[in-house]
Image (cartoon, rainbow, N blue to C red):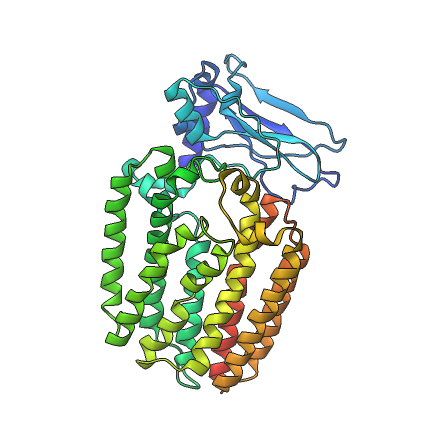
Length: 423
Protein backbone atom coordinates (compact mmCIF):
# COMPACT_ATOMS: atom_id res chain seq x y z
CA UNK A 1 0.00 0.00 0.00
CA UNK A 2 2.89 2.33 0.82
CA UNK A 3 4.41 1.79 -2.61
CA UNK A 4 1.10 2.39 -4.40
CA UNK A 5 0.50 5.68 -2.56
CA UNK A 6 4.06 6.81 -3.25
CA UNK A 7 3.80 6.01 -6.96
CA UNK A 8 0.53 7.94 -7.17
CA UNK A 9 2.16 10.92 -5.49
CA UNK A 10 5.11 10.83 -7.87
CA UNK A 11 2.88 10.65 -10.92
CA UNK A 12 1.01 13.70 -9.66
CA UNK A 13 4.10 15.77 -8.92
CA UNK A 14 6.21 15.13 -11.96
CA UNK A 15 7.73 12.63 -14.39
CA UNK A 16 9.18 9.22 -13.79
CA UNK A 17 12.23 8.39 -15.87
CA UNK A 18 14.24 5.26 -16.40
CA UNK A 19 17.14 4.49 -18.66
CA UNK A 20 17.28 1.51 -20.98
CA UNK A 21 20.56 -0.19 -21.65
CA UNK A 22 21.91 -3.44 -23.01
CA UNK A 23 24.59 -5.81 -21.85
CA UNK A 24 24.62 -7.81 -25.04
CA UNK A 25 22.60 -10.75 -23.77
CA UNK A 26 19.43 -9.09 -22.54
CA UNK A 27 20.11 -9.73 -18.84
CA UNK A 28 20.97 -7.56 -15.87
CA UNK A 29 24.52 -6.38 -15.49
CA UNK A 30 26.36 -8.65 -13.01
CA UNK A 31 27.10 -5.68 -10.77
CA UNK A 32 23.33 -5.37 -10.21
CA UNK A 33 23.76 -1.68 -9.53
CA UNK A 34 21.33 -0.26 -12.07
CA UNK A 35 18.51 1.68 -10.55
CA UNK A 36 15.72 3.76 -12.00
CA UNK A 37 15.52 7.35 -10.90
CA UNK A 38 12.79 9.86 -10.21
CA UNK A 39 12.34 13.35 -11.57
CA UNK A 40 9.85 15.62 -9.81
CA UNK A 41 8.84 19.24 -10.13
CA UNK A 42 10.87 19.99 -7.01
CA UNK A 43 13.98 18.52 -8.66
CA UNK A 44 13.19 20.51 -11.81
CA UNK A 45 13.13 23.66 -9.73
CA UNK A 46 16.53 22.83 -8.26
CA UNK A 47 15.37 21.37 -4.95
CA UNK A 48 15.78 17.67 -4.45
CA UNK A 49 13.14 16.06 -2.25
CA UNK A 50 14.65 13.33 -0.04
CA UNK A 51 11.17 12.10 0.85
CA UNK A 52 10.69 11.14 -2.81
CA UNK A 53 13.98 9.29 -3.06
CA UNK A 54 12.61 5.76 -3.08
CA UNK A 55 14.20 5.38 -6.53
CA UNK A 56 11.20 3.72 -8.11
CA UNK A 57 11.95 2.36 -11.55
CA UNK A 58 13.67 -0.53 -13.25
CA UNK A 59 16.52 -1.16 -15.61
CA UNK A 60 15.34 -2.60 -18.91
CA UNK A 61 17.45 -3.71 -21.83
CA UNK A 62 16.89 -3.15 -25.50
CA UNK A 63 17.88 -5.69 -28.13
CA UNK A 64 20.04 -3.38 -30.20
CA UNK A 65 22.25 -2.03 -27.43
CA UNK A 66 20.95 1.54 -27.68
CA UNK A 67 20.41 3.74 -24.66
CA UNK A 68 17.19 5.72 -24.46
CA UNK A 69 15.62 7.84 -21.78
CA UNK A 70 11.87 7.44 -21.52
CA UNK A 71 9.40 9.42 -19.47
CA UNK A 72 5.80 10.25 -18.99
CA UNK A 73 5.21 13.90 -18.32
CA UNK A 74 2.41 15.52 -16.40
CA UNK A 75 3.40 19.05 -17.17
CA UNK A 76 6.75 19.08 -15.38
CA UNK A 77 9.71 21.02 -16.71
CA UNK A 78 12.20 18.38 -17.87
CA UNK A 79 15.36 20.37 -17.07
CA UNK A 80 16.86 19.41 -13.73
CA UNK A 81 20.19 19.92 -11.93
CA UNK A 82 22.93 17.41 -12.74
CA UNK A 83 24.01 17.35 -9.09
CA UNK A 84 20.94 15.32 -8.15
CA UNK A 85 22.38 12.35 -9.99
CA UNK A 86 25.56 10.32 -9.86
CA UNK A 87 26.64 7.89 -12.52
CA UNK A 88 28.93 4.93 -12.87
CA UNK A 89 30.29 2.81 -15.66
CA UNK A 90 29.33 -0.82 -15.92
CA UNK A 91 32.59 -2.50 -16.86
CA UNK A 92 30.78 -5.06 -19.01
CA UNK A 93 28.84 -2.66 -21.19
CA UNK A 94 30.65 0.66 -21.02
CA UNK A 95 27.45 2.59 -20.40
CA UNK A 96 26.47 5.09 -17.78
CA UNK A 97 23.47 4.94 -15.55
CA UNK A 98 22.42 7.77 -13.28
CA UNK A 99 20.81 7.58 -9.87
CA UNK A 100 20.10 9.95 -7.03
CA UNK A 101 22.37 10.40 -4.05
CA UNK A 102 20.02 11.60 -1.35
CA UNK A 103 22.39 12.59 1.41
CA UNK A 104 24.83 14.46 -0.81
CA UNK A 105 22.15 16.14 -2.91
CA UNK A 106 20.24 17.33 0.12
CA UNK A 107 23.42 18.58 1.76
CA UNK A 108 24.55 20.36 -1.40
CA UNK A 109 21.16 22.05 -1.71
CA UNK A 110 21.33 23.23 1.89
CA UNK A 111 24.82 24.64 1.40
CA UNK A 112 24.01 26.11 -2.00
CA UNK A 113 26.76 24.09 -3.62
CA UNK A 114 26.89 22.12 -6.81
CA UNK A 115 29.84 19.76 -6.81
CA UNK A 116 29.18 18.77 -10.41
CA UNK A 117 30.10 15.20 -9.66
CA UNK A 118 29.56 12.93 -12.60
CA UNK A 119 31.13 9.64 -11.58
CA UNK A 120 32.02 7.29 -14.35
CA UNK A 121 35.25 6.27 -12.64
CA UNK A 122 34.29 2.73 -11.82
CA UNK A 123 33.68 3.47 -8.13
CA UNK A 124 30.95 1.78 -6.19
CA UNK A 125 28.08 4.29 -6.04
CA UNK A 126 26.33 5.32 -2.85
CA UNK A 127 22.74 4.29 -2.92
CA UNK A 128 20.27 6.90 -1.79
CA UNK A 129 18.52 5.10 1.02
CA UNK A 130 18.55 1.98 3.16
CA UNK A 131 15.99 0.50 5.55
CA UNK A 132 17.38 2.87 8.17
CA UNK A 133 16.25 5.89 6.14
CA UNK A 134 12.88 4.34 5.38
CA UNK A 135 11.78 3.02 8.75
CA UNK A 136 13.71 4.59 11.66
CA UNK A 137 12.85 7.95 13.27
CA UNK A 138 14.84 10.81 11.79
CA UNK A 139 16.85 11.49 14.95
CA UNK A 140 17.89 7.85 15.26
CA UNK A 141 19.14 7.46 11.70
CA UNK A 142 22.64 8.96 12.09
CA UNK A 143 23.32 6.72 15.08
CA UNK A 144 22.13 3.63 13.21
CA UNK A 145 24.40 4.54 10.30
CA UNK A 146 27.26 5.14 12.74
CA UNK A 147 26.82 1.58 14.06
CA UNK A 148 26.53 0.26 10.45
CA UNK A 149 23.25 -1.46 11.27
CA UNK A 150 22.41 -1.53 7.57
CA UNK A 151 25.65 -3.43 6.80
CA UNK A 152 25.48 -6.65 8.81
CA UNK A 153 28.53 -8.28 7.22
CA UNK A 154 30.79 -6.89 9.95
CA UNK A 155 28.60 -8.46 12.62
CA UNK A 156 28.72 -11.82 10.84
CA UNK A 157 32.51 -11.72 10.54
CA UNK A 158 32.83 -10.88 14.23
CA UNK A 159 30.26 -13.46 15.35
CA UNK A 160 31.43 -16.53 13.42
CA UNK A 161 34.66 -17.17 15.39
CA UNK A 162 32.58 -16.94 18.60
CA UNK A 163 30.07 -19.46 17.24
CA UNK A 164 32.84 -21.82 16.10
CA UNK A 165 34.35 -21.79 19.56
CA UNK A 166 31.05 -22.29 21.39
CA UNK A 167 30.20 -25.18 19.09
CA UNK A 168 33.61 -26.80 19.61
CA UNK A 169 33.15 -26.53 23.38
CA UNK A 170 29.85 -28.44 23.24
CA UNK A 171 29.81 -32.02 24.47
CA UNK A 172 30.12 -34.70 21.74
CA UNK A 173 26.74 -35.63 20.29
CA UNK A 174 25.11 -32.49 21.74
CA UNK A 175 23.88 -29.20 20.35
CA UNK A 176 25.61 -25.97 21.47
CA UNK A 177 24.38 -23.83 24.33
CA UNK A 178 21.67 -21.70 22.70
CA UNK A 179 21.85 -19.08 25.46
CA UNK A 180 25.56 -18.60 24.75
CA UNK A 181 24.92 -18.32 21.02
CA UNK A 182 22.32 -15.61 21.62
CA UNK A 183 24.53 -13.72 24.08
CA UNK A 184 27.51 -13.77 21.74
CA UNK A 185 25.36 -12.86 18.74
CA UNK A 186 24.04 -9.81 20.59
CA UNK A 187 27.53 -8.99 21.82
CA UNK A 188 28.92 -9.16 18.29
CA UNK A 189 26.29 -6.67 17.11
CA UNK A 190 27.08 -4.26 19.96
CA UNK A 191 30.87 -4.60 19.84
CA UNK A 192 30.94 -4.21 16.06
CA UNK A 193 28.87 -1.04 16.40
CA UNK A 194 31.15 0.25 19.16
CA UNK A 195 34.20 -0.51 17.03
CA UNK A 196 32.72 1.43 14.11
CA UNK A 197 32.00 4.37 16.41
CA UNK A 198 35.56 4.37 17.75
CA UNK A 199 36.90 4.10 14.21
CA UNK A 200 34.82 7.03 12.99
CA UNK A 201 35.80 9.19 15.96
CA UNK A 202 39.51 8.60 15.53
CA UNK A 203 39.45 8.67 11.71
CA UNK A 204 37.15 11.64 11.16
CA UNK A 205 40.02 13.71 9.74
CA UNK A 206 40.83 10.93 7.26
CA UNK A 207 37.26 9.95 6.39
CA UNK A 208 36.48 13.37 4.93
CA UNK A 209 39.20 12.82 2.32
CA UNK A 210 38.13 9.31 1.25
CA UNK A 211 35.31 8.94 -1.27
CA UNK A 212 33.80 5.83 0.35
CA UNK A 213 33.78 7.25 3.90
CA UNK A 214 33.21 11.00 3.57
CA UNK A 215 29.43 10.65 4.04
CA UNK A 216 29.72 8.85 7.39
CA UNK A 217 27.77 10.63 10.15
CA UNK A 218 30.69 12.17 12.05
CA UNK A 219 32.81 12.97 9.00
CA UNK A 220 29.84 14.62 7.25
CA UNK A 221 28.83 16.62 10.34
CA UNK A 222 25.50 14.90 10.95
CA UNK A 223 26.81 13.99 14.42
CA UNK A 224 29.32 15.83 16.57
CA UNK A 225 32.24 13.99 18.19
CA UNK A 226 30.57 14.50 21.57
CA UNK A 227 27.39 12.83 20.35
CA UNK A 228 29.53 9.99 19.02
CA UNK A 229 31.20 9.61 22.41
CA UNK A 230 27.85 9.50 24.18
CA UNK A 231 26.62 6.84 21.78
CA UNK A 232 29.83 4.86 22.32
CA UNK A 233 29.26 4.95 26.07
CA UNK A 234 25.73 3.65 25.57
CA UNK A 235 26.96 0.77 23.38
CA UNK A 236 29.71 -0.18 25.83
CA UNK A 237 27.23 -0.11 28.72
CA UNK A 238 24.99 -2.58 26.91
CA UNK A 239 28.03 -4.70 26.09
CA UNK A 240 29.00 -4.72 29.75
CA UNK A 241 25.58 -6.09 30.59
CA UNK A 242 26.24 -9.04 28.27
CA UNK A 243 29.78 -9.58 29.58
CA UNK A 244 28.50 -9.79 33.15
CA UNK A 245 26.39 -12.81 32.15
CA UNK A 246 29.62 -14.83 31.71
CA UNK A 247 31.93 -16.45 34.26
CA UNK A 248 34.70 -14.46 35.96
CA UNK A 249 37.45 -15.88 33.74
CA UNK A 250 35.56 -14.78 30.63
CA UNK A 251 34.81 -11.34 32.07
CA UNK A 252 38.51 -10.61 32.44
CA UNK A 253 39.32 -12.13 29.05
CA UNK A 254 36.53 -10.15 27.37
CA UNK A 255 37.47 -6.85 28.99
CA UNK A 256 41.09 -7.28 27.87
CA UNK A 257 39.97 -7.16 24.24
CA UNK A 258 39.03 -3.49 24.62
CA UNK A 259 42.69 -2.52 24.31
CA UNK A 260 42.72 -4.04 20.82
CA UNK A 261 39.36 -2.49 19.93
CA UNK A 262 40.41 1.05 20.88
CA UNK A 263 43.89 0.89 19.33
CA UNK A 264 43.03 -0.77 16.01
CA UNK A 265 41.93 2.43 14.18
CA UNK A 266 45.37 3.95 14.83
CA UNK A 267 47.34 1.08 13.29
CA UNK A 268 46.88 2.24 9.69
CA UNK A 269 48.93 5.32 10.58
CA UNK A 270 51.97 3.32 11.73
CA UNK A 271 52.10 -0.02 9.93
CA UNK A 272 51.26 -1.66 6.62
CA UNK A 273 49.69 -4.51 8.59
CA UNK A 274 46.50 -3.07 10.14
CA UNK A 275 44.62 -6.06 8.71
CA UNK A 276 46.70 -8.39 10.90
CA UNK A 277 45.86 -6.26 13.93
CA UNK A 278 42.20 -6.39 12.95
CA UNK A 279 42.51 -10.18 12.83
CA UNK A 280 43.78 -10.24 16.41
CA UNK A 281 40.84 -8.04 17.42
CA UNK A 282 38.00 -9.57 15.42
CA UNK A 283 38.77 -13.16 16.37
CA UNK A 284 39.05 -12.66 20.12
CA UNK A 285 35.69 -14.39 20.34
CA UNK A 286 37.40 -17.66 19.37
CA UNK A 287 39.06 -17.54 22.80
CA UNK A 288 36.12 -16.05 24.65
CA UNK A 289 33.49 -18.49 23.38
CA UNK A 290 35.43 -21.52 24.63
CA UNK A 291 36.12 -19.95 28.04
CA UNK A 292 32.46 -18.95 28.44
CA UNK A 293 31.47 -22.62 28.17
CA UNK A 294 34.46 -24.34 29.80
CA UNK A 295 35.65 -21.70 32.29
CA UNK A 296 39.24 -21.87 31.01
CA UNK A 297 41.25 -22.16 27.78
CA UNK A 298 42.65 -25.25 26.08
CA UNK A 299 45.59 -23.94 24.02
CA UNK A 300 45.73 -27.02 21.79
CA UNK A 301 42.24 -26.23 20.51
CA UNK A 302 41.64 -22.49 20.85
CA UNK A 303 45.01 -21.25 19.56
CA UNK A 304 44.77 -22.99 16.16
CA UNK A 305 41.16 -21.76 15.96
CA UNK A 306 42.18 -18.20 16.88
CA UNK A 307 45.01 -18.04 14.35
CA UNK A 308 42.83 -19.56 11.63
CA UNK A 309 40.54 -16.57 12.15
CA UNK A 310 43.49 -14.16 11.98
CA UNK A 311 44.61 -15.64 8.64
CA UNK A 312 41.01 -15.55 7.39
CA UNK A 313 40.80 -11.86 8.29
CA UNK A 314 44.00 -11.18 6.35
CA UNK A 315 42.33 -12.72 3.31
CA UNK A 316 39.02 -10.87 3.36
CA UNK A 317 40.26 -7.53 4.70
CA UNK A 318 43.12 -7.32 2.22
CA UNK A 319 40.54 -7.78 -0.53
CA UNK A 320 38.41 -5.12 1.16
CA UNK A 321 41.36 -2.72 1.44
CA UNK A 322 41.85 -2.76 -2.32
CA UNK A 323 38.70 -0.63 -2.58
CA UNK A 324 40.47 2.31 -0.97
CA UNK A 325 44.05 1.93 -2.14
CA UNK A 326 44.04 5.07 -4.32
CA UNK A 327 42.56 7.19 -1.53
CA UNK A 328 44.92 5.62 1.02
CA UNK A 329 47.91 6.76 -1.02
CA UNK A 330 46.55 10.31 -1.19
CA UNK A 331 45.73 10.46 2.52
CA UNK A 332 48.94 8.77 3.63
CA UNK A 333 47.54 5.73 5.48
CA UNK A 334 48.77 2.16 5.07
CA UNK A 335 47.30 -1.26 4.39
CA UNK A 336 48.26 -4.74 3.27
CA UNK A 337 46.74 -3.89 -0.12
CA UNK A 338 49.46 -1.25 -0.57
CA UNK A 339 52.12 -3.45 1.01
CA UNK A 340 51.48 -6.42 -1.28
CA UNK A 341 50.61 -4.47 -4.44
CA UNK A 342 50.62 -6.68 -7.52
CA UNK A 343 51.53 -9.69 -5.37
CA UNK A 344 48.32 -9.47 -3.33
CA UNK A 345 46.82 -12.67 -4.72
CA UNK A 346 49.97 -14.63 -3.90
CA UNK A 347 49.99 -13.31 -0.33
CA UNK A 348 46.32 -13.93 0.36
CA UNK A 349 46.63 -17.39 -1.18
CA UNK A 350 49.24 -18.13 1.47
CA UNK A 351 46.97 -16.76 4.19
CA UNK A 352 44.11 -18.90 2.86
CA UNK A 353 46.24 -22.05 3.04
CA UNK A 354 47.32 -21.14 6.59
CA UNK A 355 43.68 -20.57 7.56
CA UNK A 356 42.51 -23.95 6.29
CA UNK A 357 45.54 -25.69 7.77
CA UNK A 358 44.89 -24.16 11.19
CA UNK A 359 41.23 -25.20 11.06
CA UNK A 360 42.26 -28.75 10.15
CA UNK A 361 44.71 -28.84 13.07
CA UNK A 362 42.00 -27.57 15.41
CA UNK A 363 39.64 -30.31 14.25
CA UNK A 364 42.34 -32.96 14.66
CA UNK A 365 43.11 -31.83 18.21
CA UNK A 366 39.39 -31.83 19.02
CA UNK A 367 38.97 -35.34 17.56
CA UNK A 368 35.91 -34.16 15.69
CA UNK A 369 33.89 -36.32 13.28
CA UNK A 370 34.36 -36.67 9.53
CA UNK A 371 31.60 -34.21 8.46
CA UNK A 372 33.83 -31.40 9.71
CA UNK A 373 36.43 -32.18 7.06
CA UNK A 374 33.80 -32.43 4.32
CA UNK A 375 32.55 -28.95 5.17
CA UNK A 376 36.13 -27.73 5.48
CA UNK A 377 36.76 -28.91 1.93
CA UNK A 378 33.77 -26.85 0.77
CA UNK A 379 35.10 -23.85 2.72
CA UNK A 380 38.47 -24.33 1.02
CA UNK A 381 36.68 -24.20 -2.33
CA UNK A 382 35.09 -20.92 -1.30
CA UNK A 383 38.48 -19.43 -0.46
CA UNK A 384 39.87 -20.62 -3.80
CA UNK A 385 36.89 -19.11 -5.63
CA UNK A 386 37.34 -15.76 -3.88
CA UNK A 387 41.03 -15.43 -4.59
CA UNK A 388 40.98 -16.78 -8.15
CA UNK A 389 38.05 -14.69 -9.37
CA UNK A 390 38.38 -11.38 -7.51
CA UNK A 391 39.20 -8.36 -9.66
CA UNK A 392 41.33 -6.28 -7.31
CA UNK A 393 41.00 -3.25 -9.57
CA UNK A 394 37.18 -3.29 -9.36
CA UNK A 395 35.71 -1.87 -6.18
CA UNK A 396 32.36 -3.53 -6.72
CA UNK A 397 33.92 -6.97 -7.12
CA UNK A 398 36.19 -6.52 -4.09
CA UNK A 399 33.17 -5.62 -2.00
CA UNK A 400 31.19 -8.55 -3.37
CA UNK A 401 33.94 -11.05 -2.51
CA UNK A 402 34.36 -9.48 0.93
CA UNK A 403 30.66 -9.83 1.74
CA UNK A 404 30.67 -13.46 0.56
CA UNK A 405 32.85 -14.41 3.53
CA UNK A 406 29.76 -14.80 5.70
CA UNK A 407 29.22 -18.07 3.82
CA UNK A 408 32.74 -19.23 4.58
CA UNK A 409 31.99 -18.74 8.26
CA UNK A 410 28.69 -20.59 7.88
CA UNK A 411 30.41 -23.55 6.20
CA UNK A 412 32.94 -23.90 9.02
CA UNK A 413 30.18 -23.64 11.63
CA UNK A 414 28.14 -26.29 9.81
CA UNK A 415 31.16 -28.58 9.75
CA UNK A 416 31.74 -28.21 13.49
CA UNK A 417 28.02 -28.75 14.20
CA UNK A 418 27.68 -31.98 12.22
CA UNK A 419 31.14 -33.15 13.22
CA UNK A 420 30.19 -32.84 16.88
CA UNK A 421 26.87 -34.60 16.39
CA UNK A 422 28.47 -37.71 14.90
CA UNK A 423 31.41 -37.81 17.33
